[in-house]
Image (cartoon, rainbow, N blue to C red; front, side, top):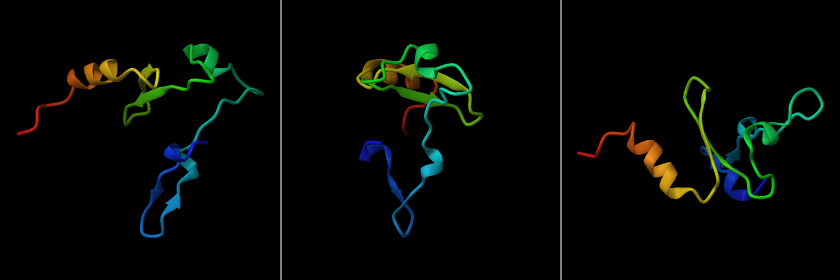
Length: 77
C-alpha cells in the first residue's frame, strides 16, 4: 500500500492495518470489475458510518467529490 493510505495514529504512531481492504478473488466476485475500478489508477470510496458505499470515484474527481459533500454538509458558521 502507498504510504498515504497508511496513516500513523495515536501516541505511538502505529499503523491500523485493520482499515486496509483488498479484493478476495478466491471466494467472491472481483470488486474492481463489479464497481468498474481501474486497478492501476485506484479509486476513492465514500463509505457511510453504517458501511453503505455511497460513492466510488476516480482519485482525480475533485469536483465530483466536492459536489457529493455539498449536498449533505452545512456551511461553516
